[in-house]
Image (tube, rainbow, N blue to C red):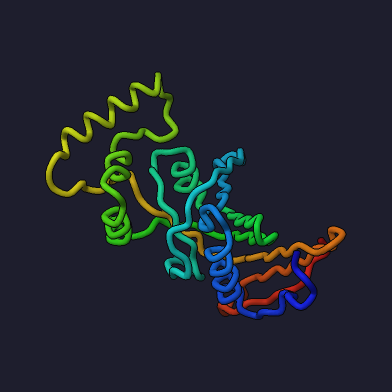
Length: 206
């Protein structure tokens, strides 16, 4: 467990995120970059799923952003395009720490999406072409057959990025850090971005 000498006293939430994320990469046994992303439809129906953060500290919108990639025809892709706001939650159970992030979302550039797609394994690239993400699937065998057809079309040469496969960047306007304390007397500090780009912060009751 954490002790009181670990108190959250930082004034820059992005620097603090870097510190906690580095610790998670060193200690979390599985996928320290895994993050829950919550979206909502235009009429307010929420949904949440796990994705992998692929970059952070990226400036596309008004603030420092957190980037992940997906099929824009998926449920989350459609909701992000229709209602470009989202929330994230990192939960590192081995560290007993969490980070919540809220903000506006925008699509990354084609150049940025191309560069990341090119860095993926060939099998992952082929899977991105074969998967009609979030659409009904008759059987697992159908998916395997779809992958086989895509593979046959791309036996040689590079696999191009599908135009519907892209990245989204959440530009944080609020970041909250949560640290486990004994007897459930946890520590929470919330940062909110000011109009001038700076940050204000305050402790919250657990």
